[in-house]
Picture: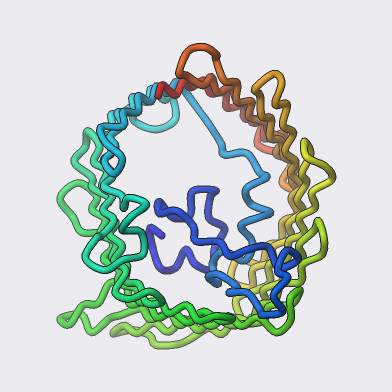
Length: 318
């Protein structure tokens, strides 16, 4: 999470740089116990993973695995919309032997050619308690510093996040999450966001629920800030579809989006497409270039209302 406010917004498919500890599928549990519901900000993840990530310009990413727990990558991005840049990314991950063990943190950092830094750390304090810290800078200025503690029970998850605490300006943002598995198919919970500053102070309560079927998931978040509903359906091994509806009371806007993902294992290709109520149509094709250790990415997005076209081409090596 780049910012704690993003918990209530629509993140991209890469919401968190850490591997997601997803529980067993609720319809695959056979021991009679309720599963852990996961995190509150991951309720809509199944649907969001179907939508394509917007790509623009030319991008080259070179990934190198130095050991079982250390990886680095170099990314070169040439863009006509934003300034072109270079990014260096490093990951120190936990090995399989010390995963979820104390004293073995996960560290991820990224710095670009302008000097902006994005750093994440994850510590498993116990088997059920983990702590996360996020630091972001924009050139020489601090943008975000965020701390989160999460407890995962057998059938519930509770988390507290503090972001951008500033004693001099008397400002802070606090977020509390709670998610409970009510039945093997039903999950209920809520999110409370509290913000305090010199000029204003307030809170927003959002309630959420998710119901899972054999091959589909329906999710709804609703609160003072608006509503967010999504539906995910896996038609077969190759085709997945997702539908999203979002309404904001702050901007007085509503959006409707439809996305789908098609996998062609024999051709080693994955295609994702989307269409929304803002007259935006887009698609991204990923093709594995065997026997080379590389993936070709091609994408195009058209905004008919604004008469804009964005085309992107990328290559991931490693």
